[in-house]
Amino acid sequence: MIKQIIGTSRFKSIRACFHSTILKNSEDNKTPTFNRRVLLHHKDISANYGNAYDYIRDEIAEDISDRLVFLTRDFPNVLELGSGKGHVLRKIMQSPYLEDKTKSPVGIQNFHLMDGSDPFNVNRIHQDEEECEKLDDHFKDQSLDMVVSSSYLHWANNHQQLYSTIMRKLKPDGAFFGALIGGDTLFELRSCLVLAEQEREGGVSPHISPMVGIRDVGNLLNKAGFALPTIDTDVLTVYYPDAFTAMRHIQYMGENNALLNRRPMVSRETLLAAAAIYDNMYYDEQHKGVPATFEIMYFVGWSPDPTQPKSKRRGSATVHMKDLAKTMNTQLNTVTTAD
Image (cartoon, rainbow, N blue to C red):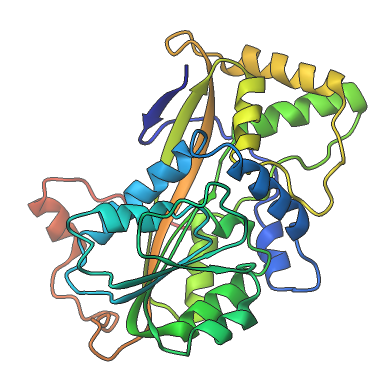
């Protein structure tokens, strides 16, 4: 039985030093991080299992639709990039608060939807989401009111090019809503594989994708020219009976290893050692299982428009922070630096 705990959790800071790799490669189109052919194969396999293993994507889509409810304007033309089975678009079309705001939703997917079922009026475009130049065949510049991307962007090889292309396609004051998996996602599994491989084989190889951080997402949005970027994170902890069940679910989600320099296989001894370490380090008696952490980063950026609010000039504040802290009955924490 799988139990899901939504919210912020405390976890040990066991991190592999892969965070900067994906952004470094994103700025250099000649050195991709992921094998797109292998990724497409994984997504095709995942489609065979229907919606049974889409609980992470469903949770992310639900959170995105909840955020969209607070928008007070209409978005007639909406594009979901990396739509897959249409998790976000389905939530939008099913919501009584959002169905009137989105008149012409379009989904771009890069794998075959096996069941062929589509109860909503959605135009699907079948192409690799990273082929940014092909977006010009379908959408003119400044033709979209909103672009949404859920659970896909962490597989992008060239983030900067993708974000810049989205920026071109948005109308002035258009919104780019996104959610990507990053930060300390699967840090438990990552640390156990590192320890097991070091002990059994005397070395370490990458088994989990490099993850972007909050600061990285902010830098990407700023470089692409988005205004008023806002980013927040949520942590989803899923408990599985054992490590092998966790790895099987990740595979059926289509989220298994697609790194370009991945090992073709992992030895049985290494996997058994990793499972034993996982159970020893992280087993939770209360939940009767081992946790797998998914850190989700939600963000929104806006295409610049003269009507948007502007930040005030530095030093123009009329209220001192100490007075504000006293009014709120809180203590102001100050940071001092050595000369």
